[in-house]
Amino acid sequence: MKKGEIILHPITTEKSTEQQGRNKYCFKVNPRANKKEIMKAIKEVFGVEPVSCNVINISGKRKRERYKIGYTSSWKKAIITLKEGETIEFFEGVQV
Image (cartoon, rainbow, N blue to C red; front, side, top):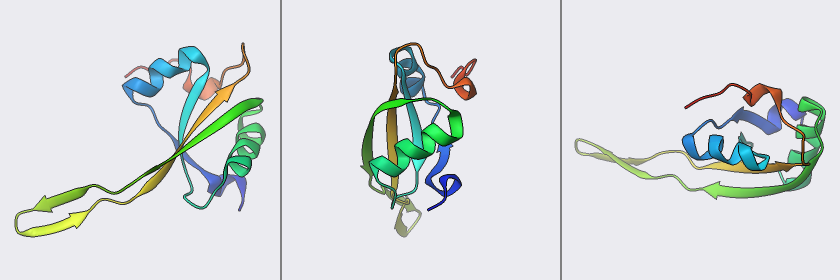
């Protein structure tokens, strides 16, 4: 996979913004990517040194619209921990 195909977009929720104080950043990633590929892509795209990567598979939730029942898409979330003192400039100034 190419590095642009691994990291889909950043997640900017209230909880993820709070974790930035502890050098943790959240991203929506390709469901087929593994931890090593994700860490390598973060290093190449943002130029920072990730210490660890936690990956969570988010299952699709059941939704109903009138008489029709369906599911939202399943996706994968990666929480990247950076070295002390490093930041990703993309997230600076983001407020929820």
